[in-house]
Length: 467
Ligand code: FAD
Ligand code: NAD
Image 1 (cartoon, rainbow, N blue to C red):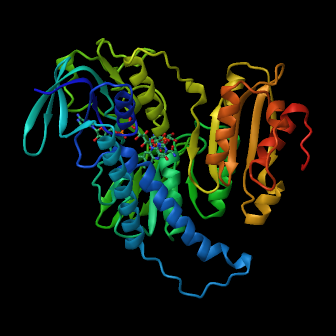
Image 2 (image 1 turned 60 degrees about the vertical axis):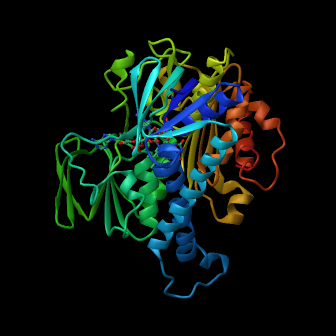
Image 3 (image 1 turned 45 degrees about the vertical axis):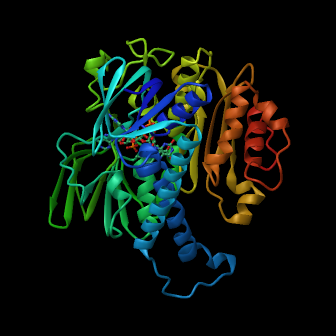
């Protein structure tokens, strides 16, 4: 029987990063993955494929709708080869997952393909296609991720009533895609298909889309998406989803109990994800999960069993690839006896629609609820020379800072390249910068990042230059 210092179960951005960091720290490491390819949800059916389709559909939309104003006339009859777009997405996935194989070899990590389950706290059985093996691991890390959640009355047929996984590999562009859930997945994939010509209707239970982000971001993104033709049913509770042949009918009621019926040809259920521990046989190791199915961990990401740790989507907190990766590094260092730290308040969140939406720290609603005295500086993208040059004039940067100390408490962006702009805010907040610190840093001209400087100036003394 092979023996390891650490076995990692699950090869997503939590697990594979944890394995690499363990190996870097001199620990003999095994990585166990039930699928044939490594990389987990993120690389196979999540972050990477969705961004590939977002980029491809953005290019299509640019050619169809946005080149004319740049003085480029596009011949009529531009054709969409959707099958090729999906095939390109698959090629991007393969390149990326192959990269993980290379990294495993490079770091001398033993990879086992098969379903991992605990026999006891130090033995893991791996049921592969051809054989079942058992390994011994002094310590193990549960990084088994999550699966799409659904509603109890919905029967996912995975053909027309689908999750994000199927939505990333459709054979045709829907005529009318009904999306249940106006969160990250619903809006990213909704925008992909809207750009490709589908009618898109989003049914959201809360009174606004992306309800966990700052309210101003919800408003701005809804405004832009409505302009692009997406239809929203906010404050609507879905009560039934039915399919007859190629037709899908979604029934929902608003707050006054008024019923609406929406008919389409596909329904994407995007109401969140649930932790995935099926088949792990946690009970054999004595590991506890809570009522939401999350593996319970302490601040060191250690479960109730001393030698077993857990990270990523399978534990509490944001279901984000970089959160899982940060925890992967953290836990490897804890196992190696180091004292790492993670500030969960500083994990940014991004929605990769266009304009992009990005946030870090506290929202205005949270600061109000926590009764923190704050000031706010906001700067509209449309006032930037860079935005006018590219034509990307939607959005803003909003900086929230402590009223007394000027320390930055939250940064919320909607706009071109917001996903990259937010890194400046994360760095600033990590070093506990004030809004004035950001305002005094030189920002290259012309760049979108000047909106950070202007919003910081506005927050400091209401002295933005270009507004
Ligand atoms: P996962 O990536 O889910 O990996 C877990 C792995 O464990 C899987 O490969 C699974 O097969 C394996 N496994 C499970 N049980 C066993 C077992 N018993 N034995 C062996 N193997 C097992 N996040 C972002 O930050 N940015 C994005 O842009 C983004 N886009 C997304 C788009 C979509 C459509 C979706 C669905 C998600 C997206 N996410 C994004 C979320 C992100 O994918 C997850 O937060 C991230 O993958 C979680 O990483 P993880 O390592 O915890 O788990
Ligand atoms: P989400 O939590 O972002 O959004 C789910 C939405 O569904 C919420 O707005 C919620 O109010 C709504 N909802 C819940 N029940 C409903 C009901 N009965 N009727 C109507 N609406 C309902 O979840 P998601 O979009 O499914 O994404 C799952 C996870 O994957 C998220 O945690 C997200 O962080 C992650 N993800 C991240 C990215 C990214 O970082 N860009 C992209 C995709 C997914």
